Image (cartoon, rainbow, N blue to C red; front, side, top):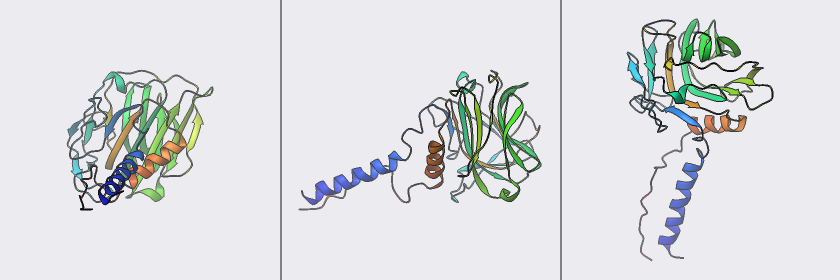
Length: 245
């Protein structure tokens, strides 16, 4: 085998390795906001967000304009009310947040009356609520002013429905959920309860993902590791350097 063939094999190996980290994590993905300079939906479902006052900021890796900052005064994203976002069964919500005010603030909300789902900060707690009732929570007292990974999961495939809330790679807080998740046609909001400025979030947000299925604990770990540790200096495509035999 000549050097050219060996180089092509090595190039293919790196491409497979870089892509395998996210294999399967696109299954059931109905919205994905990497915030690569805008609030477009990278899932292919067209659930783009309209940005209201929130401003681009460096993400947790220090890369400029790859996250959004919310100052707690009318900053939010309106991601529309497409039917794909009206989740009434199993779901997973994942994102990175940097909290700057632990008193109160809606992080993510798709709810009308008591029907729907949300993640919020209240009285030093991060809370995952379904149908207007808090189902799991996490104490953020020691986590203010730092980036944390959050994943909220509702699994309706079990005989007893279960809600879970993960923070970083810790074991989740969880509880049983004895109800059907209500349908609603309100928009998905990031950073606010309702416009123009009701219960706003103060902090930063990045890499928001919404699934129409319950990710497993192993998948949550993979998502945390994949998003938090991108391949270092590995391009998405490699051009082989042709060497003479």
